[in-house]
Length: 113
Length: 116
Image 1 (spheres, rainbow over the protein chains, first blue to last red):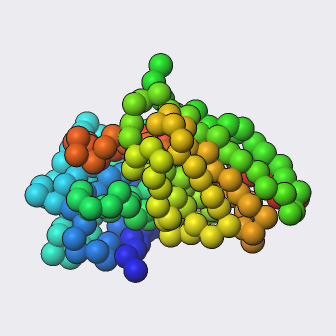
Image 2: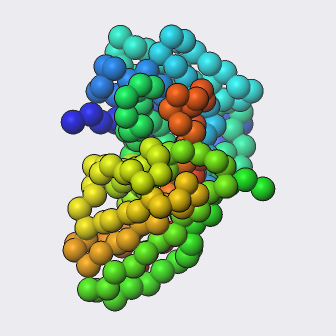
């Protein structure tokens, strides 16, 4: 079946450095790729998303890039801050048909002060 | 404030007992979902409902049941047939696909179930 692979599973960076999390998807019909941030004991919240007709999207310190040919997409966080510490999930979905998202396994990001 | 409310936040259950997790939303969303989260694994879809009185199995529906009698409510029952029920359960909602411009899922804060 369809799956999304996410790497790394854990990532530690010094405050102010950049962090990159990568995902690869298998369903070539996927055309919507959101990233969710989950803080301890909370539900995930959308932080940024990208659609397949766009190669890159940026929102302040976070950006997402998409390579449709290679079927992978990445989250980039620049100038990391302690409050960026959380678990990040990528997902892939089609925007027609079923409502199914396929989530990656998550990356625990620790920003060291 | 609009949002999704899950209860209880923590629940303990003895083996062989059924337990029901509550999920209520006041976002006027048509679609609702239940996900299971285990350490080191992504969110796995248990059940979803696109509209009142209708629901579909997700990838790991065995041992679970749901109902969707009201638009606002989508309770999940973890039955004694679920072999490994200890997990963190997340409920989410979204608008109807025809008007779902953003694609965003709105999650509750989760319910942690522990089977003793």
